[in-house]
Image 1 (cartoon, rainbow, N blue to C red):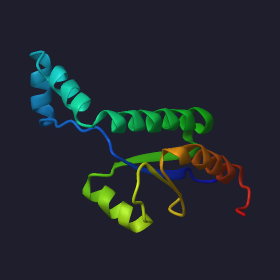
Image 2: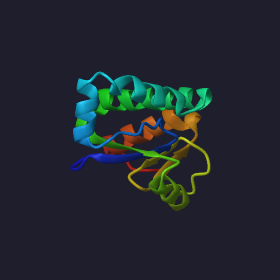
Image 3: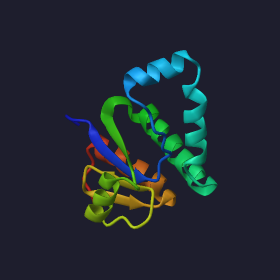
Length: 129
């Protein structure tokens, strides 16, 4: 494949809010910033969505391990404006939603493995059924 394969994942993602870069450096030097951000990330999602996000994260790591720089993965927070738009565009009503090359969609965490097989198929150059 000539260009990397684009894999977009729409999922609920943990969120932490940061100050401007200069302020973040100042806060970090005072030893105040890291714990606040860790606490935000720990409490930003309910436990079931945290487990789901961890499964997506593990799946993404595996895709990079297997396919290296042949894939570009873009994780989009389902609660963001872009996540809302992409959900409408691709008809995703449940998450995570894996969109491969803007054409193939896999909805739900049980579809991560089939999405991985589709990525491998596309990167090998096989024709679709």
